[in-house]
Image (tube, rainbow, N blue to C red; front, side, top):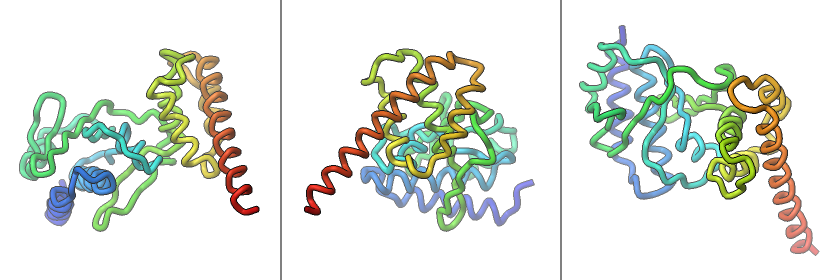
Amino acid sequence: MVSVERISLARELLGRAAACDGSKEDERLQRNLLIAAAFREVLTQEPIVVGGTAEDFWTADAYHETALDLVTWSLTSREKDLLNELGLTREGRHWVHAASGVPVEIPESRLRGDLARVHREPTHPGVASIISSEDLYLDRVRQSTMSPDDEMLPTYKSSVAIAAANYDRMDWRYVDQAIRDEQEVSRDLMRGIDKRARRAVRDRLSGSRRKLKRKLK
């Protein structure tokens, strides 16, 4: 049973989301996280932000898709009713928050990754739960196996961007072990893409350091 207080907080979060300017990159991310936090208040299982919004968060870069992807269990009838009461309507596979123009999709019921690594970002009020940078990176590497030699593939470029933005903070031992334990796609392909992505990041970081040294001389 969802308390009146949590429903009220969800309503406040959605109101703040509606007040964000979705045409501005920084406000678009804030808006999506506020909506994710609102879902978190009224759903039984914690919804976790994945997809483009998670990439936007971990890379501090603009992601051009507008849908907010959440991983959570299939919604109960009561949860669907609550979302309707909060101003969200079901349109095909999306729940649309008309006031902010954001479609919310729940593509999967199980997170491909470690729940203990989920990042919880304060949204004042509320909290948005976001897939870890490591598991998002692994997702992009996994998707890149569909065309493993294509360095222009969007998912490969995403893997490089995620690694570059979080290189010193990511748990690379965890990434290595996850690739060794992979069951659904080729481990060898994932390993090759991972090595190439890391090399690209190291080359980029080395180039940035060389430029900085020249400026300081």
